[in-house]
Amino acid sequence: MLPDLDTACFDATLPLAVAPLPGTATLGRETRLALRVLAAPAPREEDEAGAARLEAKLDLALEVALMARRPHVPGVRDCRIGLDALAWHEDDAHRHAAGDTLLVTLFPHPDSALALELPVRVEQPAEGGRGCLARLLPVFDEAGRQMWERWVFRRHRLALQRR
Image (tube, rainbow, N blue to C red; front, side):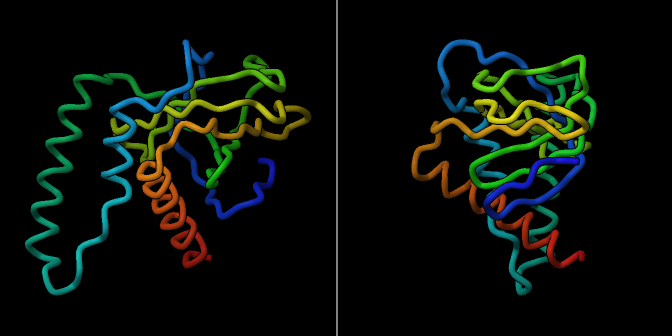
C-alpha cells in the first residue's frame, strides 16, 4: 500500500532505482531533456499521420542512443507520482530514514531507456507494508516545473479516464 499524496498524482508500475544523493541537489541535463520529451504536446488530428511517423522515428533514435548509455534498467516497482512528492514500494532490505536525501532514477515507461533523476528527501520511511514517501527537492526552474506538472497532469488525467 502506497501513501496518499496531497496533489494530483498517478499510480504506475515503473522501473525505479533509489540511491544516496551524491553531492548537491540539482536537476541534470539529461533529466531536463527527458522532461521536454514527456511534456511535448500530443499531435493534433489534422497532422496526426505525418507527425506520428516522425515522432515514432525520433523516439526510436532516442531510445537506441539511450540504450547504449543505460544498458541496464532497474526492476519495476509500484509507485505513485505527484506534483511535489513520490511514493514507491520499498522492501525491508533498503530502508531509508526520515530526512535522508536520495536520488530517485525513474523511467517513465517500462520499456524505455529515458530516465529522470530526481533528488528527494524521505518524509515517511517504508513501514508495515506501506511504501516510502519522499518530497521532491526544489531543483526545478520555472520551465522545468511546468514540464514536470504537464507530464504528471497528463498521466493523472489518463488514469482518471481508465477508471
